[in-house]
Image (cartoon, rainbow, N blue to C red; front, side, top):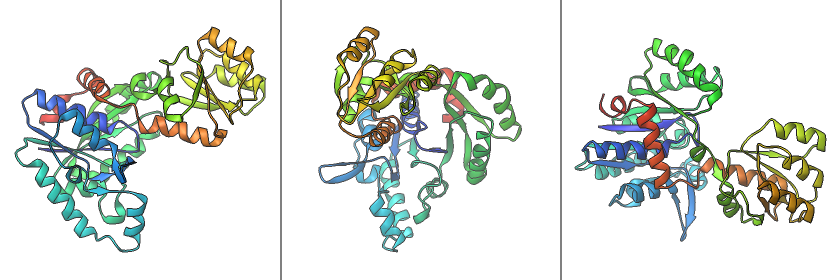
Amino acid sequence: MNTLVTSLQESTGKTAVALALARLAREDGDSVGYMKPKGTRLESSVGKTLDEDPLLASDVLGLDAEIADLEPVVYSPTFIQQAIRGREEPDAIRERVREAFETLADGRDRMLIEGGGRFELGGIVDLTDPDVAELLDARVLLIAPYGTPGDVDDVLAATRRFGDRLDGVLFNNVADAAFDELETDVVPFLEGREIAVHGVLPRERTLAGVTVGDLADELGAATLVEEGLDDYVERFTVGAMGADSALRHFRRTKNAAVITGGDRAEIHRAALEAPGIKCLILTGGHRPSGAIVGQAAEKGVPILLVQTETLTTVERAEDVVRSGRTRDERTVAEMESLLVDHANVDAILHD
């Protein structure tokens, strides 16, 4: 049995869901393999560009497989450019994917296939996730976010694209404010259209965010105040307004980091007055005053100092949260628990 785990957009938890399902299937007695046909979460190492997800899968699942099979297509900017120029042959690429899959699936009861980024990615070489599902004869589990009722349009568009291969939808990382509406209104609406909803997973801060300490490591930041490094950051806000406006804005957010210049003392003070601000990221290499450092230490709010300017820092910080660089075996185990508690795992794995 082959299951393709795909999504409406990037960073919806595909990897954690796919690996958690693989481990749950193993616990049920199945021999399970994994594959990500299109490497999209790329990182360069030892002169090679590889996707981090197959590397994590190999480690978590203990797979004895070649990375070239786990990730037969490295969907890098260079690859895309070459494909546009006609230097990559779609039929040959599809054959490469099919052969790698057959190697990995040999002797396995079940294969978990991870989609790339968003489900339409890969169209340049006729290898979107719907194409992959058809090529590898896979059922499709669609991972979807949910914030407002308008998001249902995207779900419906995707279900039409996958057609009969769609097995069902799994909503992930759903905020408390949207949870009841989703279960009370949206799920019955979708089921009324004969679209199975296999679960609604609530937002967990350990899966939705990154610790301040990990963020500091990823940004290469100097830590001026070390209290609170284990707190989680889920979003960022830029302190580019006046002090009064800043304080009103900061008080309306939670689990956030304020990114601002190190010379904006009035913004620093406003951020330290807001309970939802978990850290200050000060840009441009400007150190704050001793009074600000002392106030932050007293309130347990870390201060990170970076040399980059504000815009660059915002882009890098958001990339850290989006890419989920803190994912590891612990994260997969947490996703297992969420699936068991909030999803119909039997329907996903056995129907």
